[in-house]
Length: 283
Image (spheres, rainbow, N blue to C red):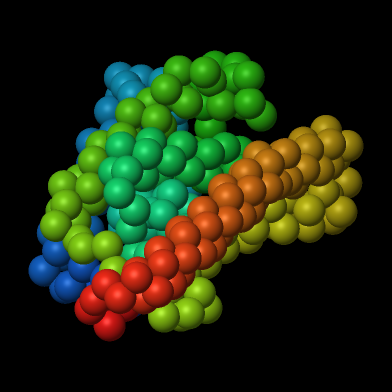
C-alpha cells in the first residue's frame, strides 16, 4: 500500500496529467479504446525504459535511483509511473497535432500524414524540456530520479536518446492514428468549444510546469552550475515553442483567409445564379 500511495501521491503532478488524459480520452475515444491504448502505451514504456537501463536501447544506457525502491511501484527496473506517462504524453501530442494541422474550425483535417508528423515532432520536443529538468530532480520535489552514463549534447541527453525518443513517439502516435483512423472530420460551432482544447492544455501544461520548475530551481539553488543549467532549460522552452506558436498563428491565419475567400466566392456564385434564375437549392 505504501508503494501504491507513493506512486499516486508522490508523483502527484504525473497523476494530475494522467487524470486529465483519462477524462479527455474517454470523452474523445471511448473507454474501450482508451483502456486498450493506455495498456499498450504503458507496455511500450516498460519495454523501452527497461531496454535502455539494461542494454542502452533505444535511449542509450541510464539508470534510476535505487533509493526509490520501496517508495513507489516499479516495473522491473523502472518506476511504473515513468512508463504510465507514455500514454498521456503520446495522446496529448496526438490531439494537439490534429488541432494544429486542421485548424480550430474542424475536429481533424484532410492530411493524416501531416497530422502524424506534427504529433511525432511535438511528442519528441516535449521531452526536450521534461527530461533535462527531471535530471535536476534532487534540487526540487522530484528527487534524484535517473542519470545517463555518457555525456549528451542537450543538457546531458545524448544524441542517440533523441533518436530513441523519436522512434518511440512514432510508435505511440502510430497506435493512436490506427485506433482513431475512422474519426470523422466535424465542424466546430465556436473556437473556444473545440473538443481538443483540454488535451492541448495537457500538452502545454506539462511543458510549462517543467519550465517554471526550472526557473524556481535557478533562483533557489546555491550551485552556480545548476543555476546556469536551470535558467538555460527554462529559456529553451521559449526557444522551442515560441516559433511553433508563431508558425501556427500564421498557418491558422492563412486558413482563415482561405475560408473567407471560399465563402466570398460561394456568395458571388449564388448571386449570379439567382440573377440568372438558377435554382440554388436553398443555398
